[in-house]
Picture 1 (tube, rainbow, N blue to C red):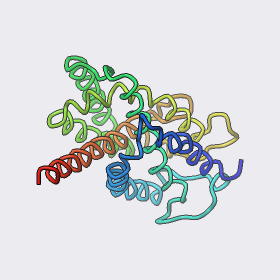
Picture 2 (cartoon, rainbow, N blue to C red):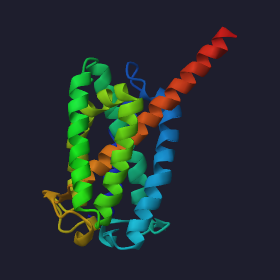
Picture 3 (cartoon, one colour):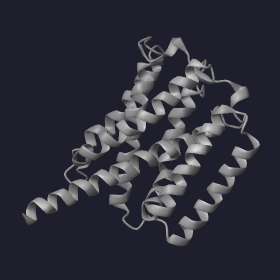
Picture 4 (tube, one colour):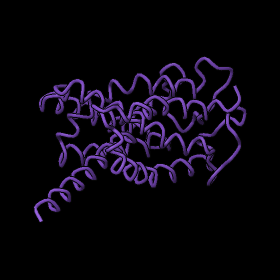
Length: 237
């Protein structure tokens, strides 16, 4: 299908965007925090993406994209970093609203954090000579370490919803990497990955998703707290 990547981007955004105005969810009120958070995330992920593309570590099938590029990246890839975080953060806040007791306990958070860090450190040690796990796991280790030590309640909130978010994320990512279509939309250089796949999806993509979305979530919460404090100060004056 021509322009498949574009349709996946817009399709993932469509329902979350429309439901953002639901009177109970009112997700649109978080835009003031969400979009700056996405912009900051993109300031790191776009150069990373562009560098990997230019070096041939991964690339894009011209059959499935419009052909318009910015800094060697298809416009669809730029939209990916806006549409997917938007849809996923909408899902997070919706699930949190519907199930307010969903955050993990401190004990469960500690166990999952320890397990994740062990796996990431092991993966990094054994694959330090492969660019995707090297950069991907290094960033995830630093991010998780920071959030665990300084914003642990946010990690307890994020981890259970991330498990839910992984289902649609992997569905979209599966299509992008060749599941159910004739060829890949996004291809990876096997020598720069661990060569472990969930169907057609490189295992590293799950950590990439965690890092991208956790970055946006933590920054969104930071900006929300700033706005709320500013509002209280204005009321007190």
